[in-house]
Length: 89
Image (tube, rainbow, N blue to C red; front, top):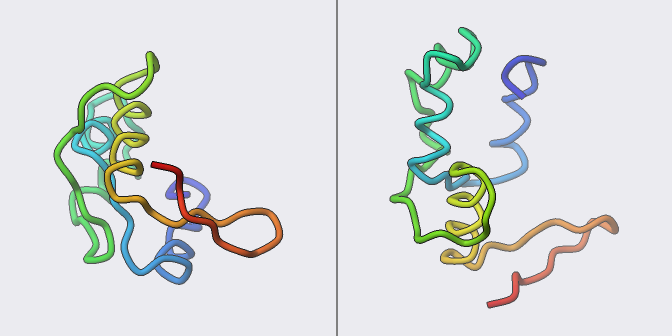
């Protein structure tokens, strides 16, 4: 979203977005694009960095941690018809 200059859409859709520390670490990593590193250097108020939860799935660290944060927060997810559903516990 940062690289295609649509990051400003997220706070219009969601009041708060939770990301685990692992995702934050991927965004600040030297291999991340410069635009991404510059953006995350000034974390916006609507982005909340959370501690990494335990492993959720055998996938890369950032994705697994993001799924764990979702599970912990029981966030509502948008679905195709525009309705929201409660995430399973």
